[in-house]
Amino acid sequence: MSKIGETPIGLPAGVTVTVAAGVVTVAGQHGTLTYTLPPALSTEKAGEKLMVKRTGNQKKIKALHGLYRSLIANAVTGVAHPFSKRLEVVGTGFGVKLQGEDLQFKLGFSHPVIFKKVAGIQYQVEGNNKVVVLGVDKQLVGQVAYQIKIIKKPDVYKGKGIRYAGERLRIKPGKKVKAAGPTQ
Image (cartoon, rainbow, N blue to C red; front, side, top):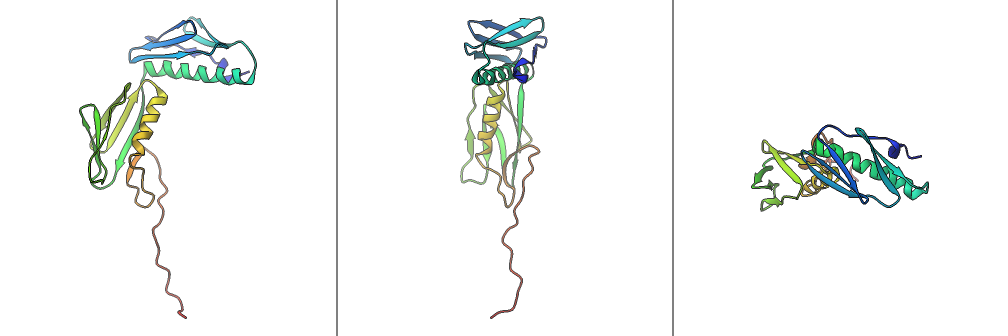
């Protein structure tokens, strides 16, 4: 029995879920997400709860049961309250600003780095060194935040670069001069 798949999904006010021919559409005030269910899964709506049911007990079907229940639950949460990831730009002279709908980073390169807008994602810039990535799709928000982070990963010696807000880095010590010992 899949413990995740058996858990009912609560539907908050303002979120509608429609199922037609194996396609689940979740709509809310912030957007719409659509998922196609495998043939072994179905949904059942009872009041303000949505259940994902499976037809068999094979290992693959059980795994898909939990996966699609989690995907639909994340969609319900995302259309009600968008997901967000916060990033910090750390370093002397480093910064970020909005250029239209794109992000422009100054990261110590000979040129500014432009990160283009991704469909379904919104950017907010706080100050000149904090970026907030917002969207209804949890997976897409995390993916875009990671793509921004790898533009300039944090340096392990000085800590300069782009990191998640609250991320702790282990800073390595630099080269150390050996203590003067007897010479031979």
